[in-house]
Amino acid sequence: MTSLTRVFSVLSIVILIGAAPAARQSPVAGVPAEIARLLSEIKQRDKDLYAVSEEDGRFLRVLVGTRGAKRVLEIGGASGYSAIWMGLGLRDTGGQLVTIEYDAGRAKEAQANIIKAGLSPTVRVVSGDAFAEIPKLAGTFDMIFLDAWKPDYQKFFQMTFPRLEPGGLFIAHNVVNKRDQMKDFLQTITSRTDAWTTIVSPSGEGMSLTYKNRR
Image (cartoon, rainbow, N blue to C red; front, side):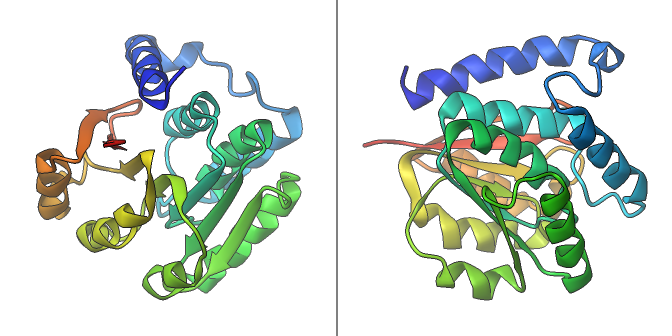
């Protein structure tokens, strides 16, 4: 199955999930009980709403698994909630995640949560300014997840899209509920001739999926 076919398969799953009541999803389905408790605790402490929704976390995990992702970059890791979801998928694919968080306190929390989840071999937390830290990372990525300061989305896209492998996927969060803060970014990803973009809303916050053409 090609990467593009996997993407379309996942989008079909999202449509079905989006049509079903969220209450039907068990909070521990497919997740070890201790990690489910940890995820719940992170959400309860997330008073500033930095973490993605549970539905979006599940979606990220499915994307990682169906694409067989091996090298993933997260920009804006907060306290590690989304990193744990992606880390669960990457533990299955044998891949690695680098998650960068600007706030030192949240980065410390993320590191502690990754350790509690038993995902240290899979997820590396980097504390610092992503604009300064990304150039220090070697190689390319087959999946990038952006959930940082919304007005900076355009800059982050321009910085990292060249390092996305052909056939790779660039994902951005909050493109529905905070779209007015990233109009330049949305214009860019929907007008490129070397990529295909669609927007899905597992939880209403919205995520853009930009597939980088292989040719």
